[in-house]
Image (cartoon, rainbow, N blue to C red; front, side):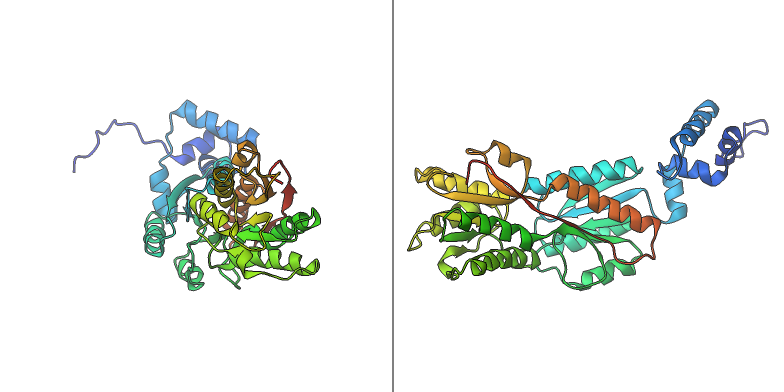
Length: 339
């Protein structure tokens, strides 16, 4: 290997920046990593000193020294659902402000793909993982990721009892509010559309059932139409629900995408939501304000949920040994013309 000439300039180091900015080496390191722990005034002084000296931060080398990078893995089960796109925007907004980048992957409800993606995140030395698990993900996955030394936050779909960090919503309360509203509006035959196996589905169905029970209404299996949580699923489920006898006059939907599919089915039959049949979705995605007619929904503020999830993971990174962290969004009814 050729040696540099004797008169070659010495490479700049982080210590040079620290001396020029009159701060410690660790302070410079935190500033260059984009840490929010350093005041903006000090950060500006450090960045100005680095620019004046011509110092360029080698992030890759720093990542190798730490054995983890400034990237957070975000693994989503269904990015075709705009709910998750809005959640992801909230996550990225918070992580970017804290100096992290997002490595995003869509598993498309595939357990095999989820396993491959998680292992790839590990190989890329991500600092943490936010995971919305695919259906029927075993709870042991939490222990597996922990064994890698990577902080994990489970998003939206819980994995049963456990001490893992979690961000989601009070699903049972949400469908309870929606069902109770429809019953109080004079709908004794309220259907439930969409959803499949899993804790989230069970919670939402339980809220629906509790509202019926409170009002002394018997549950009718013909009014519960299980379907994929998609537009097609909602479309087909609504058409099936219309065959029930006595007929249903309203429906609570598993999510907004199901509800939008149900709206389309009503249109095909020449029915108008809000006049001939009432529909309430669940999630509060932006598209619901611009459907025809605008859709009533259980609003859990997807972007805010994403920000909360990112905040919890950042807190875990700051305090690795703290107790379980959780955020549960309180749902509210956002009423529009579909009811």
